[in-house]
Length: 421
Image (tube, rainbow, N blue to C red; front, side, top):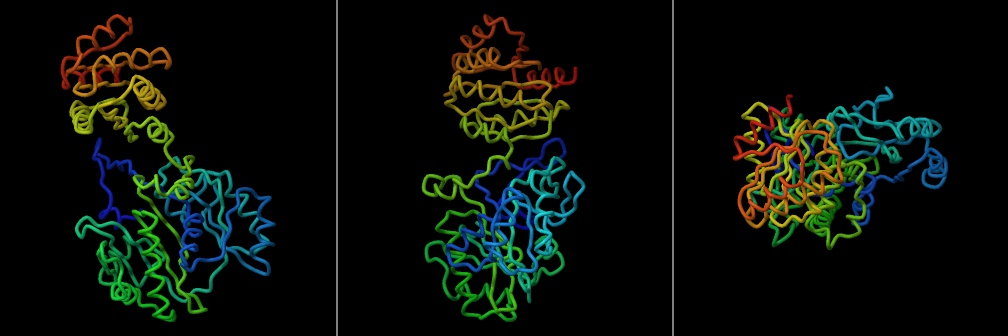
């Protein structure tokens, strides 16, 4: 998600002097999957096919691109900035326009390799699919997006007559060219709304009426598929006077998974943080951060306070992990497995204020986790609230080497000390 849209739809956590992106409860799919979905809604997209091995390339070219002299080869990862990215193998660029007889070679240099871009972080992401597309004869490049806007309490269409580069740069250089058209979620998009968007795009050769229909189809997809973001950069005009979505970035609301089963079947967990995938399966709220103190807390507010006080004492939290108010022993065990899987974690702080969540359940979970997981780091435990005496007794009788704390300040101080020793 690019910077301008971040201001509209995302939040951040300021931790240890760095901005950490929050876990977003939404599905992100690959470009080739987004293009296929757009095509089903009547949106003009380039002819293309995804391949997962070099052996598939020759057949794909014969079946889909007979007679084509040049093709676009696009690495598929769930991150932007692919074109300017660099593979850890040294190969530069995740998007290439090449002669048809070079496609196999270029594809082979991408598949199975790790691509590092501005959005992946230094660890990069492994390319498991490559998207082969027809090369379009372009006349013009524009920017188009639909997102959700809190201010207008509904969908917001963002358009710019220039595209193909980052929207942040466009917003800085050409702020007057960016238009925003809020859509009444109850009335839906009107011809007037769509016409405003087309006027903002200012197409040079594409038919105005056809362009209005394309905008309406994109909005239909956005609503019917429960999207939280639909971004096309660039939206292009071709020499055949068509408006074509030459890119496809779509996110979907996780709360709609029950009615969008086909779309959510497209999820690629290999592109996600493995810890967050494991946490989601265990119904835990987890966000991986960059610190050294693993946190297990019940309640989002207490979790935030715990991270703040760790920072106050000179430490940095390794995660946000809220086990919620109804966690079972099994979930507590899974939480410990996730925390201990992070090699950066030097200490674990368990901070529980028992209300609905009972301290004895947490204590039993800690003991069971110790039996299943090799705890090689010190564990600081602060329990207070419902069944606290039973919880403390369970921990004491377990024979585990735990560091107990009387209050949150004491717990954070001991955790920071344990992590640094």
